[in-house]
Length: 165
Image 1 (cartoon, rainbow, N blue to C red):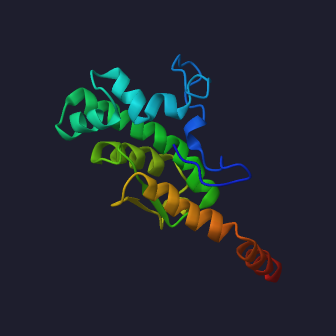
Image 2: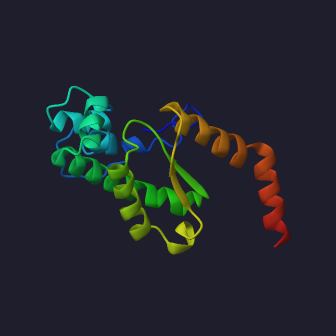
Image 3: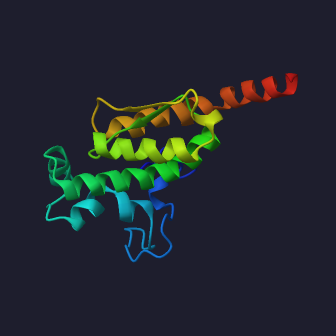
């Protein structure tokens, strides 16, 4: 779902957070109950007669009730994981990108995110969708987080600020 850096490119990969210990849905990583196995476009397309994630999105856009409900449920699962991420990172903007970044999915994300994350973490949080292609979210997050927040100069500035308090 999202890989943005780290020692080997795996930082920020929320797709392999286990969200349902009782699930039999097998992820591409081999584990059961991962977010990607339950809420990715491919996983949702497998639950409907859709050939792939893009076809699934077309069903959502067309208002297919089953597809709309699956998209909303997937958004809720993603929102559950993102509520933890938002509390840890405390971003100003959360960009939802990719095939599933449609109204119903994003509504599900927001529903759970704002219920579960601390009000302090969401008070000034903007949840937006990307106007760019699938890679925009990953590339944008990498630039903002890895190259800005965790860059050596940024870490040094934060440590100096904390030392002054």
